[in-house]
Length: 96
Image (cartoon, rainbow, N blue to C red; front, side, top):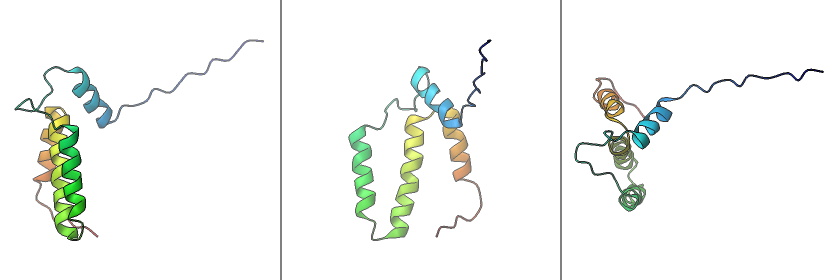
């Protein structure tokens, strides 16, 4: 009896997979000042935002700023450009 071979479906890479690959393997994919956010620096910023959680609006704004900084520090330039373009788009941002 012949054994059936099952083809594996190829995983379509997400934008995050591509960004990680470029960050990990591309020597020119660094931010402009060649400084990356360090683990302790990120931890302190997260702690600062959590400490201000009594003011939901300020904490949310700081969280958004942190997300953009993390993207700037760890993603390739083309990802940074698209995320910055989105953050500058002229539409109202609502939150619950």
